[in-house]
Image 1: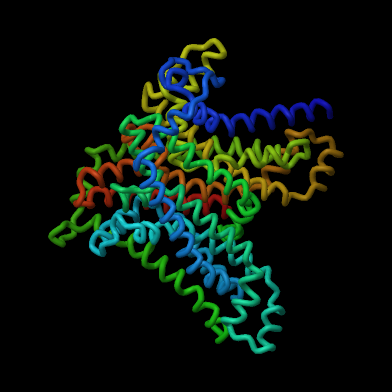
Image 2: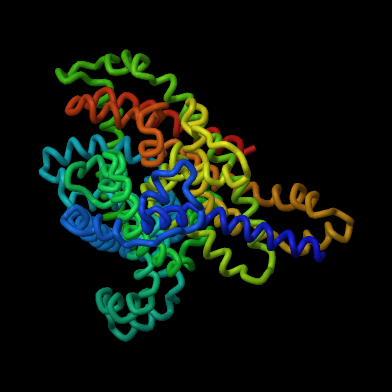
Length: 272
Length: 274
């Protein structure tokens, strides 16, 4: 038994190191002068000299602020569009019998199967005609494709957990759908709605494929990082990456409860 | 459908309309436009010269990356999930650390791994150096380049697979393990005779979710290896940017990718159905 204990700790240590190492190297590059990172054949694995110079150089000027604002605007809008579609859908699905809700849910989840590179191109062609190409609204409409399935699933779960008796009681007291929504459903589902919003925000913040197809020129941060790297602005790319990643890591840790296997696979279990 | 059911169904309609407009219609349009010339005539023209731009290679490479990435992710995820079913000090910290890659954007992951696998100034070579080995050119040939993509993708996506498998493992009744242990089965036999068979459903789900995403893998190879060796997605993007506004060639490649994804789904569902 002692030996297996030791084995568990060795495995835990190794796997943790494996998951953290890439971020560690990114931090080494972002916070050290290049003579300790990009230039030597074998860059040292421990920090030698810390500096904020790379970060300051990359973040001053408009090179960072414009794409940063684009990303914030798009992600905020994606969260709102997603909720506008997923709150009614999640509520409706939670009150429908499973013979009806199940196929609909599977259909919504199937949207994730369609690759962005495939449908992004016809969408780009349509957007050019409709004047939505290179706009935040257009990109947000497309990115909602990535967020809608998981948000619907989370909200369906949230609303299912609210007892129907509570709603019946309100109905007997004379509350119409709007008042039931306002006084019964929304207060009781606030955590689920917040989680769905934040997850949508995060997915949009990270999204690359639709962003590069629908907003290639003055784009969001992921596309900007990509162009920086391909043009050889490696230090700027690394610095942007660190700044870009910090809020998402914090969000991810905060939302850990909702990033469960049951949620990710939930709708597919049994249907697959 | 009863009347109250209809009321609830109406609430789902906006989401369904959105999907029809932004998924179903563009998908059909992509397939349709790949067979139609600008003058409106049906033709296989766009498919004819795909071979010359590397379609065959892209298909083979896409399959290699998909199979390789799935294998690495499943193996790693089984290890992570097995570990997290055990009770030990610091388990919460480990499970938090484990989901770190989910908070790292694909683009950032790709950029980070491009630094790690750099030929000069790369941290993978630094580690080799630590053990007294010489640095490697990680992009020496196509196979190595694809391996770099597979490993980077495995880091980014193992957590999702691990979470799914963990959900499956915690659903296996502990009594099965006690009974097997009493009968004298060691940990390895218990893994192969209890854990794996009971996980079949969850492995299938993980394979479906990840497998489809592997076929669609785009940002990672684009940043790590560019257009060579080509994958179906990077080929689509290359054709799109080089021949725009003529989207025919890229959509013909996109249609082929779509066929592969559908074939993969049918394959998994049939294997599982047995």
